[in-house]
Image (cartoon, rainbow, N blue to C red; front, side, top):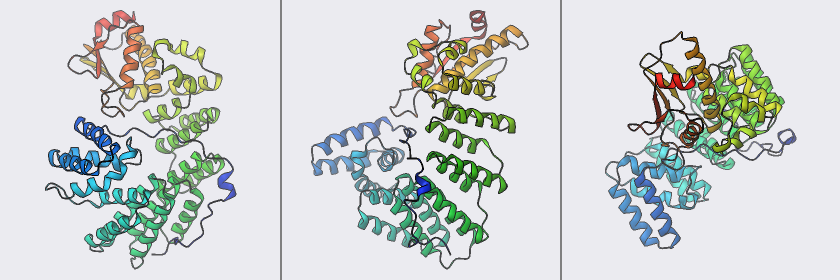
Amino acid sequence: MRGLQLSLPFSWNNQRSHQRQPPPRLPLAPQCALSKQGHRFLTSLAATSAADDPYATTRLLRKFVASSSKSVALSALSHLLSPTTSHPHLSSLALPLYSMISEAAWFSWNPKLVADVIALLWKQDKLNEAEALIDETVLKLEFRDREVCAFYCNLIDIHSKHKSKQGVLDSYSRLNGALSHSSSIYLKRRAYESMIGGLCVIDLPQEAEIMMEEMKGLGVKPSAFEFRSLVYAYGRLGLFADMRRSVMLMEVGGFELDTVCSNMVLSSLGVHNELLEMVSWLGRMKDLGVPFSIRTYNSVLNSCSTIMSVVQDPKSLPLSIEELMKILDRDEALVVQKLIGSSVLIEVMEWTTSEMKLDLHGMHLGSAYLTMLQWFDELRLRFLAGDEEVPAEIRVVCGVGKHSIVRGDCPVKGLVKEMMVRMKSPMRIDRKNVGCFIVKGRVMKDWLG
């Protein structure tokens, strides 16, 4: 397969790529929480590791694997392998843990998991161990092109998440060699998709764009994924002219602007505090009929410093949209006004005669806060209009923190609870489901007046 070879000199210091310095990265999204057993294991592992007792550490690893279910053991391993692990000081123990897990009776060999291990070994500069695992994997896959391609593509993806440029390039070189004899368009497309995505994640969008042109030259049409990757990479770097040009190329290529791509643009603008540009983009979305989503709310409101400040102190935050608007600066107020008229509230709200439910799952604090303010106004208007039957029960679903960094800690629930207390709302935590607030519909109607 023809492709960009490892020997091609990448323009690491290309002047256009450095018109603006890349901003500090935003905090990464929290991982799925570990089980209680997994938390206890990592706490004990940290203690034995700090004591510098390799024998005790080995015993602890073996005991954990022997006493844990498949899901618990693999969850703990995935946590140590993750680029965003909250226990980076224990990542050196991922390989011995993987080795012990691979000996368990329930273990099924998985090349995707092996790719995770290899990428971490690369990051730790344990290249001999990584090389041995790569050779072992390719041998187990019996050199079947499609499966070997999937393995190397996974490896490129994981290297890019670790921000390992050399790891990405090395894996692509291996992939190029493995598929050099193949005429499969599917495999070419898969390889290009992975490499372009990887280059974009490691902040090399210009090199990715060169590869897209090469891809076209071979008769392989880029998909929406490649264009979106390019848009997001240029945007993160603050190269907004290139970002807009990439959006135009995507549209010329036959892909309409959608919510996913728009959210990438909004997130990029937010990182660089370009609120007026964000207002303009939200307006363009409305004009084109591109629907807003929960992620649109998250991307936009995370960029409003005033809102991010007040939600950290729920005891003093404004309790109506009118009060909120008074403390926002002009640009933030324009952004919020664009969001308020969207359909997101209606989409997360279900209204039947038996129940009215508001689901805040997936919302960051700023989004949950603004949605709650909108929701109170919407309820009041509907009750006053009297066009719909009052539901028997009203429920606000916050969750219980299963997806939080600290298991059981749900910031959204804490925010909503404080709002309910300060507003003297009749809603209370559901005894049967502590992740919900409930109230009788008639009681809520009377309270809203």
